[in-house]
Amino acid sequence: MKSLFSALAGFLRRLGAPVSGALIGLGQGTRFLFAMLAASGTCLRRPGLVVREMYFVGVLSLIIIVVSALFVGMVLGLQMYETLQRFGSGDVVGMVVALALVRELGPVLAALLIASRAGSALTAEIGLMKTTEQLSAMEMMAIQPLSRVVAPRFWAGFLSVPLLTSVFNVVGIYGGYLVAVEGLGVDAGTFWSQMQNAVDFRLDVVNGIIKSLFFGAAIMLIAVYQGYQAAPTAAGVAMATTQTVVRSALIILGMDFVLTAFMFTGMGS
Amino acid sequence: MKRQTLDLWVGVLVALGIAATVFLSLQVANISNIGGGPVYTVYAEFENVGGLKVRAPVKSAGVIVGRVSDIRYDGELHKAVVAVALDANYEFSTDSSMSILTSGLLGEQYIGMQSGSDTEMLQEDDVVWLTSSALVLENMIGQFLFSKASEDSASGSAKQE
Image 1 (spheres, one colour):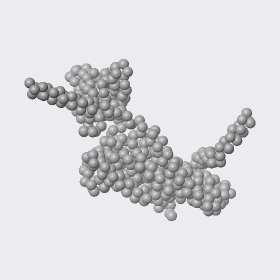
Image 2: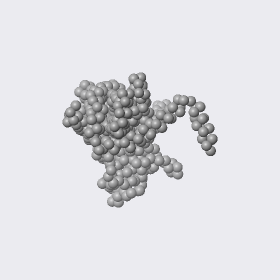
Image 3: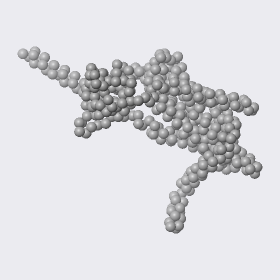
Image 4: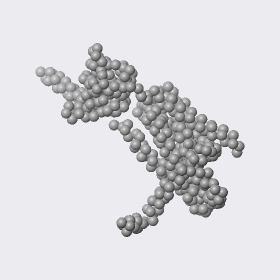
């Protein structure tokens, strides 16, 4: 039996270092997740830690979220109106903008922006703390870095992402309103009533929030894990920061497809 | 940074997020559309449901009174059987009729319901007998061309005589 297992392990190893490396990384990530969840009790006892990180992750991301959302909404309104007008149904532009934002663009773009604005900063911060041996110093003082440094940042990001996504959706819809109603002359009443007819609270709004919760957990886990695992050198921190943005983007887009397939396919035919 | 300033800004973020969610649920989505109220299900057989979809509205006199909950094909009748969940607040007579209509020229399809004159009311699992199918554009064009052609040939033969 033992030889069978070792033969199997040998076979997996010969598949190539990249494959086994990726699997080991996945295993380590899972172990890291559980260790961090187990160390999260401190966040409940000292909510000040989470609030402080929410300032850096959430509040400082507000400006980029609001500005991007405004422009995304305006572009959506402009493009959709141009196209819909060809079919003589420019009036439904409000519905199209709202559905596109609430279902897809809001959660995805907000998560991408937060991953590049806040996730990379988290990785660099934790990576530098490791490089300058602050984490080791904490351990020497019997303070768990996982519960004092990593978990508060994770939970702060996890809580901030849905809030920022909602802000993104509303500002985006307002951007669409500006272009369609103020700029192109769609009737304001039609704009809102078409939107209300088409957007379902549970199917669209709640599903969008659920999406953003998944994205928030994924990008924050990647960010803190990359920082915690970074090689303690300048090059190591640089690479970890890059990896955070690349992997977050890939995970967000991949998860978005899977979640959309789960949530919205029942609605067609 | 002072702790109070931090708390203030995080409070602003949370308040904005919650306000945005409330705005989304009240202004963007129609929260009264959740439809958690009690319903009863009736069935209707159609020759052709056209583009009717599950969750399509059922309207009587233009007011939404229910939603299509299921559409399936009955192999014995060779008809489509549509399950309709009607709001329990509304009652319809057993001789009600249902027809598949289109909102606007190319809009979504919905079921139009018209109550009859019977004193008995529809109950759970009842079947609506009076139905009329969706209008299929190709069939309409075909019928139009056919009637036009027969008209032409009729007038043509009349001329010859």
